Amino acid sequence: MKTIQLLLILFICKTSFTQNADTSFISYEQTMPGSSLKFKMTPINGGSFTMGSPETETGRAVDEGPQKIFSISPFWMSVFEVTHDEFDLFFKDDAVSQNSGTDAITRPSPQYIDLSWDMGRDGGFPVNSMQQKTAMMYCRWLYNKTGIFYRLPTEAEWEFACRAGSSSKYFFGDEEKELAKYAWYIKNSKKVYQKVGLLQPNAWGLYDMLGNVAEWVLDQYDENYFTLMKDITADPELKPTSRHPRLLKGGSYNDDAGELRCANRTKWLPEWNRRDPQIPKSKWWLTDAPFAGFRLVRPLKQPSAEEIEKFFTLYL
Image (cartoon, rainbow, N blue to C red; front, side, top):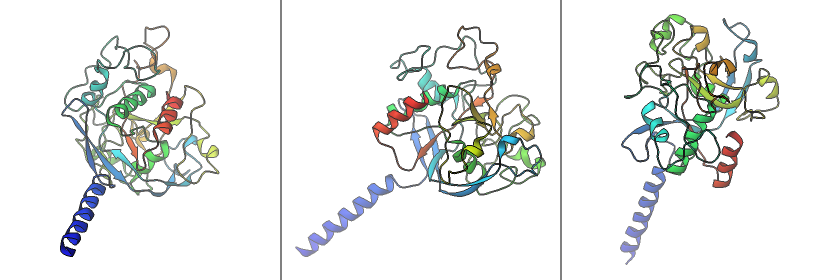
C-alpha cells in the first residue's frame, strides 16, 4: 500500500513539473490562430542597463540623454519582426468588422494602394506602412484569439533587448564597417526591405533589431524623456496623453548608419501621411512611411483581464 502511495506521489510531482514546464520562462513558438503559421518568442531576462547615448557618441541627438540606468523586468520578445503573412491573418479575418475607426476589435480599413510598394509580401517580408494604433490593434486581436497578452515593447524594453548587454553604439560595437553583417540599411538594402532573419542576430538571438523596418514602441515621444524619467528607476514607460507623436526604434532599410544606433529615436511626423487622399487622413496606414513596422513582446506575468482591457483602452 505504501509503495502504491509513493508511486502516486511521484506521479503527481512529475505531472506538476511537466505542467509547470509548459509555462516556464523558455523560448516557444506561438501558432497563429486559424493557420499553420508560427512565430518564435525568446525570453529576455531582466536586468539593469544604461539607456541613451553618451555625449561623445558620433551622430548623437539631444533627445538621447542624459543617460540613465534603469532596471527592466523579464519579458519575451519575438525573434523576428511581424511579417505580412502573420498580419494578413488579422487583416483578412472576416469574423472581425472592418472600418475606419479603432474602437473595439476592428480590422484596418482597406489600403487604397498596395503599401508594400512592391517590395514583397508573402514568404517572410516584414509588414510595413502602418500607424502605431494598427500594430496595437493587431496585438489586441492576437490576445482575443490566443488568450495571451501580446503588446508592443516599451522604449526601454526595446533598447534593453537591442543592446543585449552591450553599451556601444551598435550592439556589436562602434564600427560601421560591421553593420552590414547584422542590418539592412541604405548601403546594402538596395532601398527595399528584406525577408526577416537573413542576417546575423544580436547576442540574445534577436534578428533585424537594427535596420530592415523601424519598429514602433509603446511610449509617447517626448524630447525630454530622460528628464521626465529622472525619478523612475524600473520599467520606465511614457504613457500617452495625446494621439501623437509616438516613436520608432532601430532605423530602417532606407536609413544611414547613424539612424541605426541603439539609442536613436525616430519621432512620428505628420508628413508620413502626406499622400493619403482620404479626408481625414487614415487612422491605420502611412502612405509615406513604408519603413514603419513592429515586433511583439509578452510580459512574464500576464495582467488580469481587467488590466488588459484598461491597457488597450488607453493605447487605442
